[in-house]
Image (cartoon, rainbow, N blue to C red; front, side, top):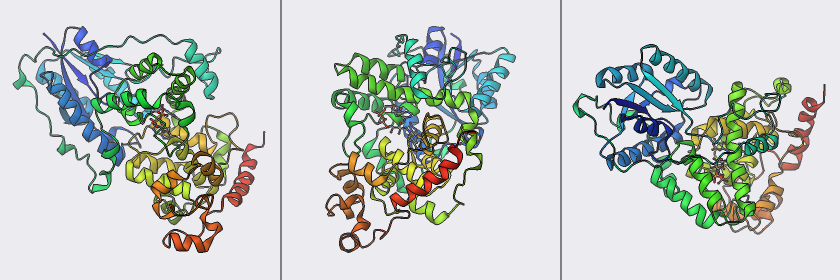
Length: 475
Ligand code: FAD
């Protein structure tokens, strides 16, 4: 039997993996390979938290493969040359992979496909990451969407129940195991951060396919019912926390959507959850059609926006959860300690950085990129531009989140703030949301906590609205 290389990247699973399926159904012996080549990812090589996750996810995938009598082979790039030498060493006839959609990676992969085909190799790519290809949904005129609601309405109208695939328990053995280059060890990829910063991540998350399956099962059992209301409350476990598993492709999004649709849960909760998956789809749609938006504003009016000059001290205070605004600081500390932050709080901290502190959204996007285990170029760029008001949104300018009002509304018992800022846990409500209102009580409870916010919420809001009014004015 001929060999096919199955080149695995952000699809670190066996279940419902179209590239693997194509190899097996095509009658090939699949040879699973991962090529580490961060320098080929443009300016967005994976950050530290992503690397830490990938390290564990690759190990988990290798374990899964070994239960089927196979294993994962790891290599260092350059990718094309690595694939070519593997083809030569193993006499493999085909290379199959699932598509990635980051602009630099898309361009690199297109070049690899051309080069392999030119040398007579069967090179095929598949959609293993999305419900809809980014180019599949468009307006009647064939243009891309810039606003979510009509995008998702059109996408849903074209919904086809996906054909899911289960990997067989055993598959054909390689004809000559010794002929296959061993590659490098996982440790040689140096993905683990130098210090023990990520230790707490793994109390919350279990990277790999089994961890993803468990997270989905737990969400279906305990989270889906009531998702529509609880999803906005960071103090409770109201969302799926599937984002890193989806980013690394440890579970197929089609599998998640099918499981949620089949669950015995209120239609409103199901619809709401599917719409969140829809935001992920929309993010890929926007990045595909507007590839510059990972680095530059979608809305060209922001070219001359008066962002504050870079101020390392202020940025550092925001990064480390020392702005003096409790809901912002709680979110930034949750991020640092767990590699993840609740969506509502992501919006609040991003709004505070871009609107109150008037720092360019790129500074925030970069910090998230390095510290989030679910860092994803499409979703991160969209999330930052949406919050900053520079991106794909119908009415962005007036939305300046007041962090005190947001905290009172979405953390009504103050549990989230108390969890991540235990030093403020003894302050009564509503003082816990705005402790500078009673300096003596704050000093007694938390002598180390900043006395005053970097920017007071109401004052920051007025200044932000003035700055935004200048670019919002039509014409
Ligand atoms: P759930 O509520 O359980 O949602 C299910 C899935 O839907 C998520 O796992 C995710 O894949 C998708 N999803 C939900 N909300 C969004 C959204 N607003 N945009 C895109 N997809 C969404 N998400 C990332 O995956 N990676 C990022 O780098 C990222 N950066 C963000 C930056 C900012 C400033 C903001 C405001 C949002 C960002 N998001 C990002 C979106 C969102 O915050 C996370 O997807 C969500 O918090 C993940 O938690 P969950 O899996 O429990 O979500």
